[in-house]
Image (cartoon, rainbow, N blue to C red; front, side, top):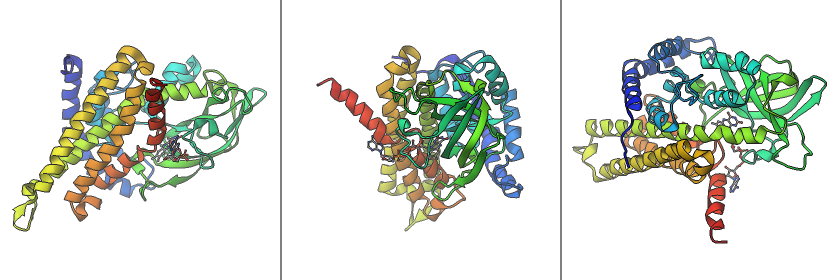
Length: 404
Ligand SMILES: Cc1cc2nc3c(=O)[nH]c(=O)nc-3n(C[C@H](O)[C@H](O)[C@H](O)COP(=O)(O)OP(=O)(O)OC[C@H]3O[C@@H](n4cnc5c(N)ncnc54)[C@H](O)[C@@H]3O)c2cc1C
């Protein structure tokens, strides 16, 4: 078993690490300052555009897309360590490199399932980083971790679909650059097969009947850098039938396909967040003195740092193994591992960031360190993309099946 990264991955890692040091970390404070001076906090600070131009110039662009025609053509195993590096600055680096969720998942859906016209209209500007997108599935009125519950209707009326429903926590939708929603709803609510009732349609933001109503908060944050998480109303919004993605009844299957690689991306970015927390923890521990000695000399701090390092090494191996399995045997063969990383990573990273917060005292929960925001982001990943319990349920059932 060879644990080394290949030459292409090493080359991109080197470039990306230098890009982070030279451009991304210094831009973190600048972005915050610029945002505070903007007419709306949902507009994009100028420094983000500058980072995007520089990343593109350096070839650090669309690294997530395995399709070489549209993206970098990297395997999951090659991209995973790059996602980890961008996770160290999760509010800037993924956007700077055009590798930010939910655009990544949406671009994958379009690359895989859209027709030529849809690709031209929406995939091309997304790949060029000219527009952003959102994925609208979750609804406040039903338990949306079970996608068969979705009630939004997509009704055919002549050459159009009429969309009616209420969605919330739609990431990115507060950003005015978010021009297109991929909406999941039911074209056949009474269909016999509950997994064939759903379809996905493309709904441009400016469609009459679409209202981006409000920004939902995350532990009191509005999450400006991610374009927020909006409540969106679709009130008899009409789109041509040509806006259907794939076939009627194919929504559930597309949703499943969309989530596999995304889980690797999220988990590797989480590992990057944990690395950032460990770095901050160590720097703080050696530079702060309490009761006559550096915090770094306290045994309990040794335990926190050692446990964090062990955990991160374990998680990284599991996520890389999952990426390798997806490349070699496909999403289906990597089912147990994909669920395992989704369960194990956010939980463990939340714990590491929590210790780093503790070590920083009041500073840890303040706006002067990135830890509080990292904590909020990591914690939501125990819910977003499906709550932990849903993955535990399905993993355990597969384990039990062996003994029935
Ligand atoms: C920050 C953030 C960003 C998000 N971004 C998006 C987005 O861009 N687009 C989008 O469509 N959605 C988005 N979501 C929504 C997210 O995908 C849903 O919140 C998630 O799927 C859970 O659905 P729910 O909130 O309706 O919870 P429910 O389905 O009501 O579940 C509530 C709880 O019930 C428990 N539970 C559920 N099923 C089981 C089970 N089988 N066994 C045991 N316990 C169970 C779990 O503890 C779960 O947390 C986002 C959420 C957050 C917090």
